[in-house]
Image 1: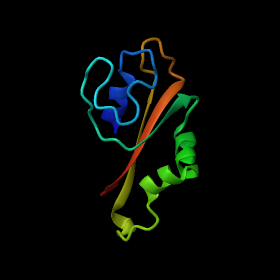
Image 2: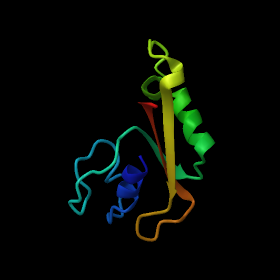
Image 3: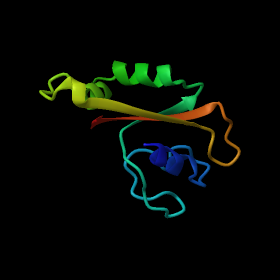
Image 4: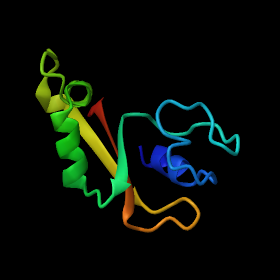
Length: 104
C-alpha cells in the first residue's frame, strides 16, 4: 500500500486525480506498483478521517470489513498507510491514505 501511495504522490502531473483509482500507468508512463485497496485523499485528512469515511461508505466498508465473511477474524488484518504532500508544489496538508484487508 505504501508503495502504491508513493507511486500516486510522485506522479508529475499537476492533476491530483491523474493516478487515482485503477490506472495502469501514471501520467509519465510509470507502471503501477504496490497493492490497491481503499484510497482516500484531500486537504486536512487524518487517519481517523479516512477510516471514518470508509466506514460511512457501504462499498468501502464491505471491501475492508466484509461482515459476511466466514474467515476466522483472528487471521484477518487491515493494513493502513498514509502520505502527505507529493505532487510538484503540493502542500504537506494534502494527504493520501490507503487501506487493504489481508490474511495475517
